[in-house]
Length: 499
Image (cartoon, rainbow, N blue to C red; front, side, top):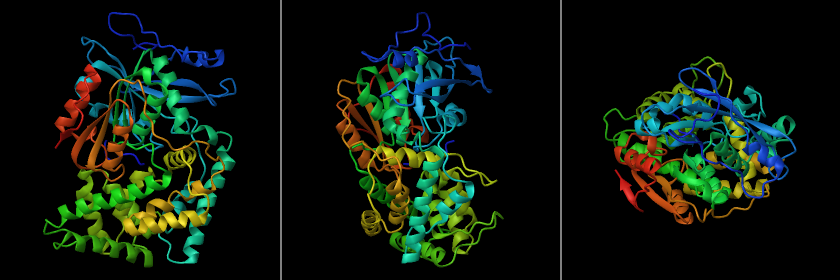
């Protein structure tokens, strides 16, 4: 579950215009140690360009809230229209897991509809272990370079040994650098942090829009705190009842579906690097390109010394499938790659994994792994992982092994999960809007259908189209439905379809 690539006052929480702050109490029966977190006041400071920043304290372990704390970084863009009736805070999460909500609001906050920005403080946060919130760090940049470049479609024993070696190295690096916090980095606890943040913001009930993994986080919140739900939009939905193997297999198929849609569009153009024949012929040329990169890495003209292996070329292709607006860049990158130059595919992949030109990475990849590995059980040994990878190659030949083998560190993870995969129903919650895009590569549409049916108050809103997530893609029908719901608490009719 990756993030979308191209998206692009006072010292305490603001109160509703014309009235006192609502009561934002902790769960009934809370211990004194937990209540002190719920009763904290955020101290906002100016952090440039109209944004305000603060730090939220949360328990490291909610089962023992007196045993240490973590610091959560929070940012807000205050409501714009001082004459409008401010509703409260609109919390958001960009996905990942591992995506920085602070960075997302700073870079993309203005892309939210004016009606929302007039009536809500737009609030982002870095979940525990992410970004500026006690981040998990596991590997040096050169080790992450090696991890992403390692052949993820092994053809022989040596290549598989390399995969196992880097997978174990990743897990061991996390254990040595962050072992004491790894058991507490999962979504279950991050959702509880959201409720502490809700209270600290002075909101009696939560308004929230979560993208991709952010939908999963929102579903966990609703299931734990159904009575605290005001309005939740879960966009690019993840189905909580799926196992880790099912998630990987369906995501691999989702990228195949998105690649087919790209190819169908490409072959209509006379300058398509995949030719102007059938879609199947075009897809075969993508496979041939991957095979050439597997046999001999493509050229890299960036000067950073990396070789564009099959894995890095595939990462670049996958990156550009997240957003239809990136298809032109993918056509150009494939044109160069067909001539042996993989530099543009390499740069595309760097965007997704947040690698800067100087070779440094954010902690997105490490946080992504840490959260995923404790959220669900993964294959218990190499043999089990091999079976899933073989199945993935059959159903998604270009992306299956790439997706499945990327999770191999979880097989060797030091913090073993105790969570069971189950449906989340959020019984008793107000209507929750689940948004799905029919040709979404990273969160297949059937996941949105699944989550909407599992939530007791779920309402499915569909975008017939391409790309990952819907609300920030600019579709007027989606924008109206989402913004009307968040402002007026009027959910769209079940089964509404936008085109």
